Length: 169
Image (cartoon, rainbow, N blue to C red; front, top):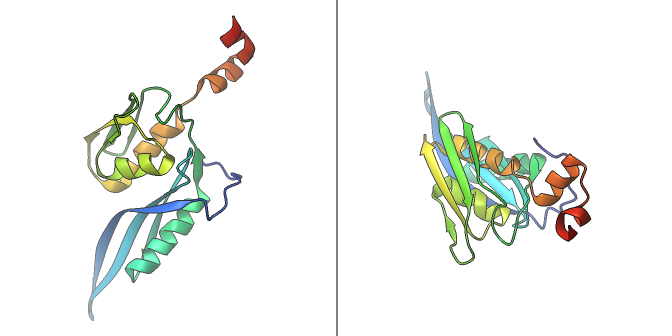
């Protein structure tokens, strides 16, 4: 569910490194080391994207990951610094659950999920990771859960109800 035309300047997006993996290829001449970096970019105001970069050096892998992340951005509805409702998603072996929390709770999440939630701009939320702790699958499952969220305006528009009727009776 990537959104192609989001008007976000590259300066607004902040990148966050989630994980680096050193990959070894054994050849006749010896071992060749390369690096794979998974990166999350977000404007901390409801836009998030992830990317995977592979290169011979760490810095080049991170740069490639950032460029890949800018190509698949997703818009996420936020409500007073938290998520609008509970959501769950599964990707591969990673199973995630994201729940709204009251103001002052903070982001209660671990590792890869925390990086995604902070990059999207969530200030208060409870998150649970079940199953695999593989950072690649956790990032993809977390973004899938966030992308599935809808706010009151989206639900009203989908049902064909004006927001005036919803709030004014």
